[in-house]
Length: 162
Image (cartoon, rainbow, N blue to C red; front, side, top):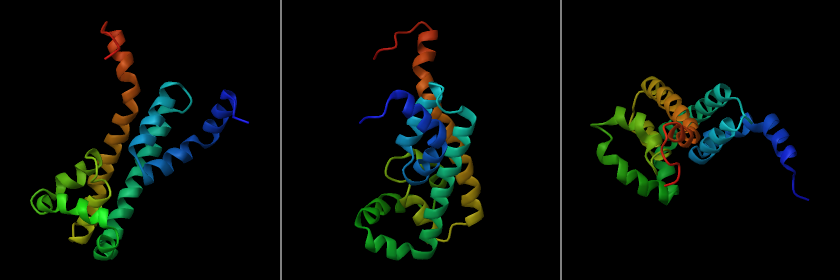
């Protein structure tokens, strides 16, 4: 028997932030955008959701960084897709490592591989943590604002359909 709307709202009210934390840790984009929609509809508190998504994204990238530092070569040899993505990021690793640390979450296909490579190549753990924290906070804040773009366009008198 499918869950009624009221049951879903109760489920989200009880477990929504935990799901956002886990989703941001493992996957990121889809879960954070869905959480933004739920914030927009009043099912999740905005500030707590942004903080939770930031913590989850930060922890996920820190985990990837430290796995890269400890097991980087083995990870790349074991996971062929990760090795292919690494080949795309490697040319910029030395000259633009700070930008890679900040921007990897905004570029499709680099969120996992970039922290692994940075960890493998001896990038400073403290520097990565600081840049990653700023990136995670900015990312989760921006993703939560996506559902409001349509409302902003309506307020400005623009047509909401594309």
